[in-house]
Amino acid sequence: MHGTRPTKAEALPAAPARPTAPLWLRRALVATLTSPAPAWAARRWGLGLGARRYVAGPALEDAMGVVRRLGATGMGASLNLLGEGSPGAAGARSAAQTYREALERLRGEGLDAGLSVKPSQFGARGGEAGPALRAVLEAAAAAGRFVWLDMEGSAHTSATVDLAIAARAAGLPAGVCLQAYLRRTPDDLRRVDAAGVPVRLVKGAYAETPAVAYAKRTEIDRAFAGLVEERLRAGRFTAVATHDERMLRHVLGLASSGARRDAFELQFLYGIRPQRQRELAAEGWPVRVYVPFGPDWYPYFVRRIAERPANLLLLVGDLAAWAVRPRRRAAPVPADLARERRRRPWYRPSATKR
Ligand SMILES: Cc1cc2nc3c(=O)[nH]c(=O)nc-3n(C[C@H](O)[C@H](O)[C@H](O)COP(=O)(O)OP(=O)(O)OC[C@H]3O[C@@H](n4cnc5c(N)ncnc54)[C@H](O)[C@@H]3O)c2cc1C
Image (cartoon, rainbow, N blue to C red; front, side, top):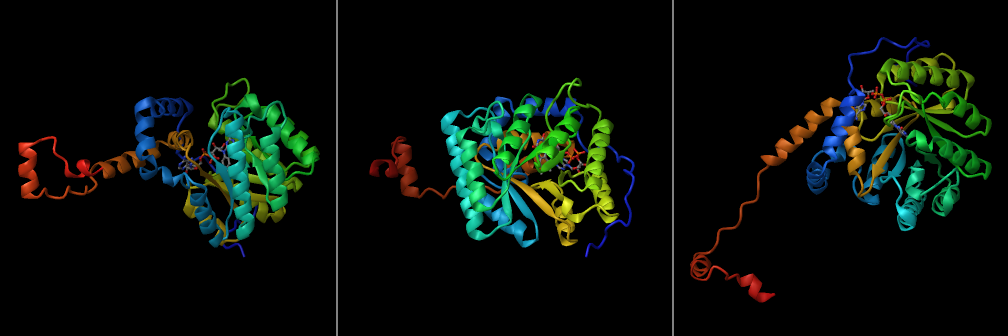
């Protein structure tokens, strides 16, 4: 039963007022929020100041708690250990170890969850997985779980597509994320489809030049909707990863008018439109949530804040609440101790004990 499903494929409805931030504002916000003072303050207090809206927490156990809660409402998950860029061999091994532990625990608890990983986190280069990422893919195969390869900036696109194709050819359970804003994406889709690699389609989150990517929101939306429609009509499995209500309704309209139900999955980021995620799952649509966790959460959090100006107001509200929070009063100093301190200001009874 799918409750409020539309009854026929809909044309893309008219765009609403701009709810997301233009690129120049995103860049300015990212630059401001990652400058030393706010970065230090947020790292010091951030997970108590709103970051938990978007990040499960610093530890794997936090992410497991979220996966269990999502599972209880019929949603699957993809775990992502935050961290990107070149971590060095030790960092790559440590990320691989955390992911292997996650896979063990997901299998042990029988949870409907896999992984979503950034190849750069493992130092993967030139389409080669490298030992750390290969170990994760093999552990996923042994645990019967799936691994999505996140797509990073366009400098990584060819290597990530090659990597996904090679992993699939080796019988490893990998799919790849492709970004509708890149002009090259239709060609990449033809390559990965020919190799049988499952695809997750997103609009795209990185700052790219007009030579490689569409810049206007209308162009990006049109490209995204067109690719989704083409794939669903052809019955090619697609994880449609968007929070855009117009896109969601377009997908559900297509699904209701004959596209195969097992040919798609709706994917969301943890903390964005959670009510809508629950509604869709309750209506019986396949929903999977990307659950980021780990100590290196700040850059991811800043990107989520910068995407939407309204988030800044939430952050300011949280900061204000934190500033006026009731503080624990210091216990009154006994009269004899106060007298002693006036006489000998250096006197601290506890210090003399240690
Ligand atoms: C599961 C998943 C995996 C992803 N993986 C990748 C990846 O590997 N590579 C990559 O480049 N990008 C990735 N993305 C991000 C994607 O490219 C977009 O940047 C992001 O999803 C925002 O685009 P949108 O389609 O939701 O539409 P938008 O038009 O940006 O937003 C639509 C609506 O979503 C809500 N919304 C969007 N962002 C926020 C926010 N931060 N806070 C609150 N509400 C918000 C608002 O209601 C907004 O109106 C992923 C997204 C998802 C959902």
